[in-house]
Length: 195
Ligand SMILES: [Fe+2]
Image (cartoon, helix red, strand yellow):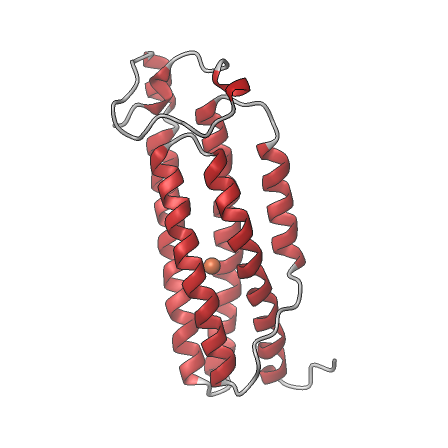
């Protein structure tokens, strides 16, 4: 494939991000399953729904360019998901595992933010205004997801709360999906305290 124009490059990179989103559709439920915090689990499940919409929106982008939607394996997303999977195999304190899951999810979000920002700019340079608008919508959603994850990282894994050794917070949902092997490693519920 010769990249003879920005338009061709745009189409090629769309195939990459289309693959990335589809891979994420499979990975997000696994990440949610490994999360102990109810809030984190909910945020990941919510992002799964948002991601389904983004896959459809990408199909609209292809359509607006007069191209059939095609995926070309995104190796970057493959690597990010592989690292997340390896990390989730580790034995970890629940709150620490949650922090790790948030970290993995944010790496994914930042990759997508870079990809969509670039695609949006290229679409707009190519005069593909409908595509540019659609890509901007997704870019905004990814930005929101990233912000939400940052907020969760601060509220769920709070070293001050951990140090204070306070009791379990009533909200947030106790883990039900965590495997029994890990629950014993938790010393105090303090790490789940909210500010
Ligand atoms: Fe996405």
